Image (cartoon, one colour):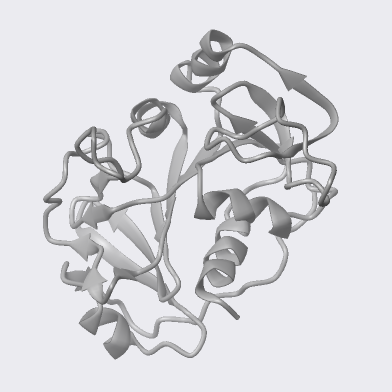
Length: 223
């Protein structure tokens, strides 16, 4: 199983039935593929869609129906299109149950950095500042390292997205929960050892007893 699929499948298990969830651009958008169709999870995109669905079949793309990153998408029956002001009203008003975002760095305090200096050929701020501040849960979905360098670090060296602590980190190697005490290692990736996770993480991890391996099945449907 490819790293992105591991991350997406594990994140999908965090999304509760009957919830409203924002998916960030890039890797997080693939989470939608692993949600049970009867779970009634509605995906929101900050550019103005409630009821976002997966990329349409080849040849069925509509250039006027895109996600926040400009990629073409489809919509579920009953979906709504809204303007950006209404969309950010949902986000800032605390109406999102969760957001799933990528990251450049996460540190020992659970602080997130997922944007950099304007003018560089890298991701910009987008709606991340509002999402991290406004969503009830903030789940970071990212590869554990970038070109072999740890992305979970003692202190972020890039500008912080928000001063609010995120809820959970899901990587291809681990599930890590930021807490008042620090970063707690909750689960291991498929075939990954605790020692390998520690070696790939420059931040200090709290390890309590046996660390189970991730479950990667499709998220449960609503009762």
